[in-house]
Image 1 (cartoon, rainbow, N blue to C red):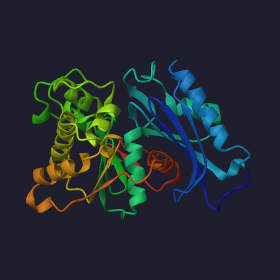
Image 2 (cartoon, helix red, strand yellow):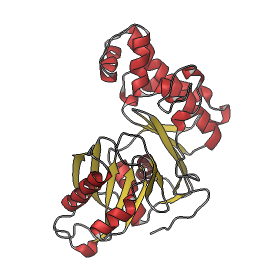
Image 3 (tube, one colour):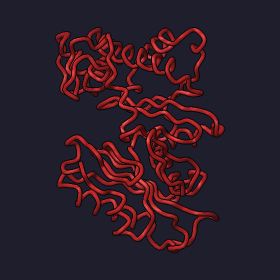
Length: 318
């Protein structure tokens, strides 16, 4: 590959429990090459092998001096200072404790920066929105779980342990008595996530194999499905309104698969604005702008347009 653009290039990698998405990007977020592969279920070494293969695919033929490095948005709790996986669920077996940044740098010979995948998504949304450097953005992702991130002054707030943004584990009155994936009770994820929609539908006597089927039933006007979808929307809306009261963001972005379910967005936004303080009810909210947002945010860690920050450490800014 000949050099496709003036200025530096980086590979942005979005690493989740089911897929690895890698893109070659420049500082504007323009994508020059793209590949996607399934996330291996056979341990951390296999995942690293798959990432290395993906990087090789999108940089094939590229002059080495054109590539500034690799940015990764990875599932799990990531220490942004060293790129280690501090904690993780079993969505990726053997993932906790992997020294991801070090391993990838050793394998590729390139600088590597790693943050949590939702944090990377938020950084990408911030860049895509064209917000000024002193703006702030709250991201909520609603899918299998509920996560998020808060970007301020161009940097994502990672927290003391790299775990900031677990908004789905905030208590919600809509989830009272419901078991959460973390083992707790009454958290927003237990009534707002995709699996929670299926569970609510089943509690109402409905039968469906998965959340997709419930969504189709809602589109067809099934009252039980509509009730289950509305519960999710009101849960997430109430959560977002409370977070708006806490952070007073310039902009709110909502991503994930659940917001695309028919009828969900309208009920969500009504609940969010109802929960927000009167002064803040005019906040700007929009759907996620691009499926490439996490890759753009990850690459920007290398290209230098955004940064990460935490409450007890400073991280290098390339």
